[in-house]
Length: 294
Image 1 (tube, helix red, strand yellow):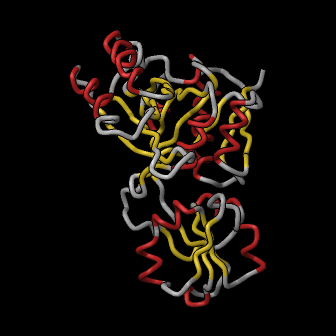
Image 2 (cartoon, rainbow, N blue to C red):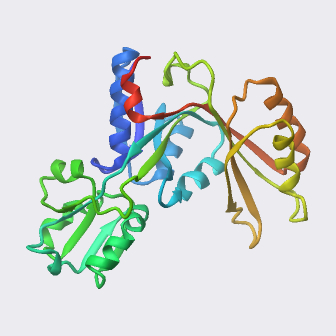
Image 3 (cartoon, rainbow, N blue to C red):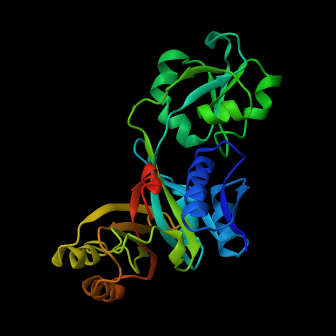
C-alpha cells in the first residue's frame, strides 16, 4: 500500500521541500512506499487528511520571524480527529526570482503573505515602490514570470531551479536565522510516522474556547499547569469567528500527554473550557535529524 502525503503546492514550495525530506526518511527507514500530493491551500491539505484522501499532511505552523501560520491553526481547530505526529524545523532562505533585466525594472512582487512579511525590510529598502501581491504559495506565480518581465516572486532557490527561472538576489529575508516549524499531521495516532527511538514526546499542543469572557477565564486554566510545574512554550489567541472579542487559545505544553499529571491537569481544566481539543503529543526535531537514525 502506498502512503500519500499532502502538502501545499504547486511543486517547489517550502512545504513540499519539508514533505520531501520527511518522505525520504519515511521510505528509507520504514521501508514504506509513499507519494506526495500537492494541494492549492494549507486548509485543503488538512481537509484531505480529515476526509481520508491522504494519510498525512505536512503544514507550516510557525515561523521564527512572523510567528504562527494562522491558516494552519484555524483549519486544525475546525477539523476533527487530526493529530500532530511530529514537528520538523527547517531553515528558510528566500530568493527574488524574476526574468527582469534588473531589480529597477520590477513593478510587482508575488508571494505567500508569510514570505512577503519575512522580506518586508529588504523590499522597503531596495525596491520600495513595488506592488506586493499575496498568493496562496511561494510558487503560485512562478509560471507567469516569463510572460511579465516586470514581475518577480519571492521563492526558494530550489523552486527557481525547478522552474528554470533566474534568481536576481539570494538571501533577502530580513533575518538570517529564519526557520519554519512544520507539523506532520495524521488522523489519529500513527506509530510509524515518527522516529521510534523517541520514546517520550517533548510537546503537547491543545486549544480551547471559554464559556464566557469574564475575569479569570484564561488565568484559571493556566494556573492549573503552573501549579504542577509545566512550562508553556506558546500561548496564542485566535478569534472564534462567532463574535467580536471572543477568542480561542492555542497552547503548547512542554510535556507528554501520556504522563499521569498531564492527564489529571487536562481533566482539571475541562470545567473552565467550552470546547477543548487536544492535537497530540510529539517531538520537535531539526529537519536534518531525520537522517540520524530511527
